[in-house]
Image (tube, rainbow, N blue to C red):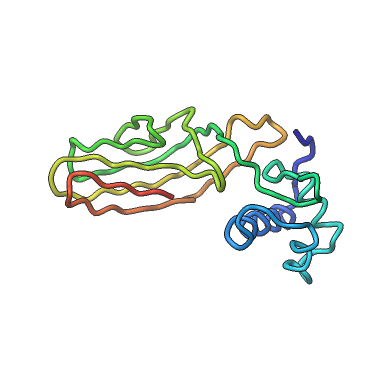
Amino acid sequence: MRNIILESKRLQSLELQIFLYLNFVEQERSSIEKIRKAFLGLASSSTIRKIVCNSSFFTFGDDDTVGIMLVKHKADITYDFEPDNPNSQLKLSGKTAATGKNKSLKGVTLFGIGYRLEVNVIQNGVGNWKLNIKKLEITDLGNQHQRKMESNPLHENGDHNRGYDTYRS
């Protein structure tokens, strides 16, 4: 694992942009030269190389290509879940979560590229629900690679009319 965290807001912003570029445009893997051309004017070649080399989200191949680290991570999540129906159940990546405000759940698995969180809301009958993820903290990368996302990274309202409703972010 790398031992340098990107502390500058500018570098963190570029790190996120490179991550999104690899995830959605290049479909997971690209050459460092292609990434440099895509971010021409935003960062120098050496800055892009520094970001990719020091980020815990990327991996280098033998052919000097850059890819997204494909792993499962654990996270601690603080959330509000307010369903209309008192019999509603919330599952975050398969773990049963409590109903109410300022609830937290530890050890939730985030999947694959982009730290995907699977959200399932199960209830009988018709009803609405509101889910507000207030804090998500990756807990298994080690202190130097810890990432935090706070202040409403995901706010979702649901409409449930079929007996089973799934939202995936």
